[in-house]
Image (tube, rainbow, N blue to C red):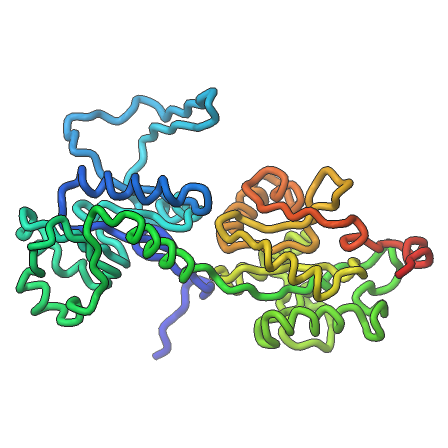
Length: 369
């Protein structure tokens, strides 16, 4: 008998135990782990967003009576909350980070750094099963050899890169490379689900470059992402003779719904969304956006040089943007520009002409290339 599917089978976000990209430091004192994490994070802070997940040794410490949120005049925010270590909620908490460091003495992670410390052999042996994906080894003493039980359990451990604890620049570079390896690929998304009410005719079929604009954009994005990774965003039940269509599952929300529907289909890639009413977009514009892409932010967007706000209709949305889009929707907002204005976004300035919108028949009649 076929097993009954109780819930809709959605594509899951690729996560470790607590975060999309996580690494536990295992094998030495908590204070040493904390010190290593702080040094690495300080070196990475200008380019990457990192977090540290640890546990307190103060067993007599009581939870706060109420949740406290304190804004500091120096520009940072402190939280003291009555939260448990629920892994589902922590995956939401850690969603914005490029890498989450984890104290492996308290919590396991999907990747590990083994810190080889002769004084902690028993501690490592106790955690042997969680050392199933060691990325590299940090030695605290050049004379300490790998423990026999480690070699017996993981013979390939002898081939792993080793650094002395004082080689922080090399360790940081290795971590940087691990972050870069996890940068998601980009898919293309052409927004053709609008009703073109102001234009009076389907904007996606207007010919600016010797072919319907939707076909021009498909060819443009296909050159960057490949045909199988280039999609059309369409209204639910919209009758169109196109392949690679993603029908809206978030209905009647315009481009916002199309972007969310794409993330529902695949929440593990970034989406470069583009509308068909931007006739001056060409390969150079697309390449400029990709060149300036910052996957550490939630999005990369153009802003016209004379404009005050970013242009949401040609934007790279990172996977970390999806929960934020849903949070705005939960508050009753379906404006992608509002999301861009109020979040951590990479802004790329460009001449206004290249992102000029053509929405009406009058604008079309006055258009000059």
